[in-house]
Length: 257
Figure 1 (tube, one colour):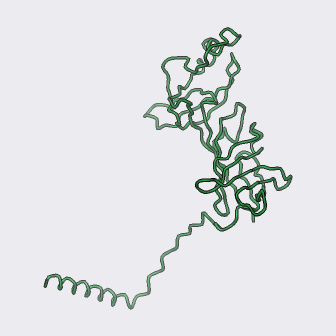
Figure 2 (figure 1 turned 135 degrees about the horizontal axis):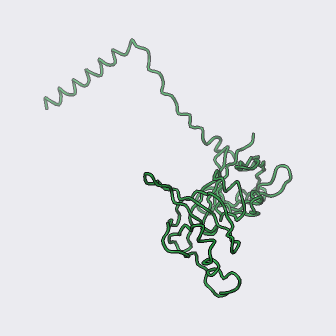
Figure 3 (figure 1 turned 90 degrees about the vertical axis):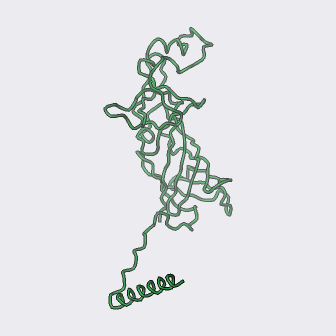
């Protein structure tokens, strides 16, 4: 019991000495508060004036309002100048935020309507997420990669083979796709050659270019697998059909004062 009592007395004496030493010194500077201002004005309603930032295209000013006054569960976003409807959103049944459709925002890429998987308001900003198959024609918004990422997509969940250009421009393509009516009942397949490099379902890809097969006129997209290459080797490249890819994108909305 005595050693414990001695230990307590030593601790108390050290605290007293430390307190006396600091009496004559200036008080310590207050700790700097973290300036975490990412989500400003979280209590603001979603309705109001916004600007949609679309990479490679001019920003669009829209007005978000309730589809039915007094009911915040369904919202519409209209062009501030023309009144054309650009967004239709419904509050999600599970989780937070909204889901719905965006209309004609990417019509220059051939998308008059695109599903909105998530619209998440964050005070003075909002994030709009969407997913789509890459278009067959050029689309700077998507092709440039600034609005999202590309992923391999297999309906069966298995790996996808990256095709060489010879795979999409030889007579094997003519036979497989029955060009000229030779095999009208042939089953379409992308398994044209043995060997080569495959990518897993869901693997991230980098868009390189879009080409048109010389024999049947189908569109293919040359991609590069996003991997950590071995020393001295290049990331694998090859061609995939647009329907075996998904583009997962997002747009940012900023509230206008």
